[in-house]
Amino acid sequence: MANEGQWRRCSACKKPIALGSMYWTCNVSTCNRKRTGLVFCTVSCWEVHLPGANHREAWAVEQTAPLSSGEETRPVSREQRKGGQRRIVRTESSGKAAPEIPSEVLIVASRLKEYIRARSGFNTSDRVLSPLSDIVRRVCDEAIKNATREGRMTVLDRDLPAE
Ligand SMILES: [Zn+2]
Ligand SMILES: [Zn+2]
Image (cartoon, rainbow, N blue to C red):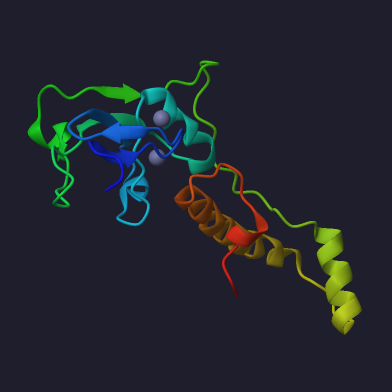
């Protein structure tokens, strides 16, 4: 290891997190999957990932990095140890409730109907719009995960799952 004493890097600001030091994780399980494994050096760095993550309710959980880099020891979570744990619950700066994830139609009906008519001469039922929007949402959720995995807060075209 080039950097003695360093455990990992902060997922937001990329600053090193030292072995044995305090760091923060997100309480949401998708942020703690093996392949995602977001770690943050401060609570404000944890806040950085929130806009892209769309958590219903999220808080930062204080953790302690392992003392040696030799073994891939799982850091001891203060949550598991009970007591001494600090939870920072996300507070909306504006004081309003967390934004609901919209479930409305994402498809421009007239454009879709135009497309289907041009392609086939067929008509299109309005009932197509809602399930089709669900498909778009699922694809977007995948793309958000891919962007998060790379520590990005902008969804790029390459984040969209391959067909
Ligand atoms: Zn940081
Ligand atoms: Zn999270």
